[in-house]
Image (cartoon, rainbow, N blue to C red; front, top):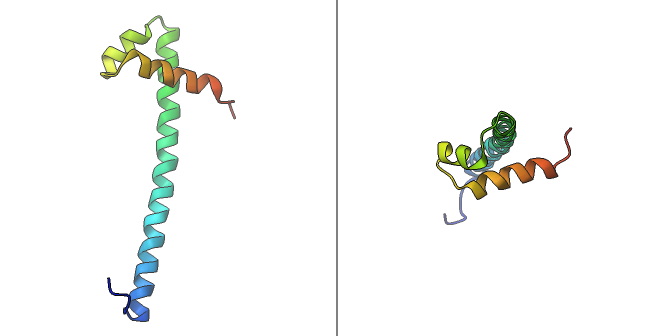
Length: 79
C-alpha cells in the first residue's frame, strides 16, 4: 500500500475494517458461549461420576487441561 489511494478506496477499506471488526466481536462472543457450555458439560459429567482423566481421554487432552477448565468455572461468579 502506497498511501496514495483515492477517497473512495479509503472509504472501502474503512468499510471492510468495520466488517472485520464486527465479525471478530461476534466470534469472541460465540467462543465465550461455547466455552461456558463446555464447562457446564464437563461439570455434568463429573457430577455423573466420570473422572477428570476419563473426560480428558475422551477429548484427547490432558487431565490438567480439564482441571483448569473446572477451576475457571469455579472462579467466575455466575450471572
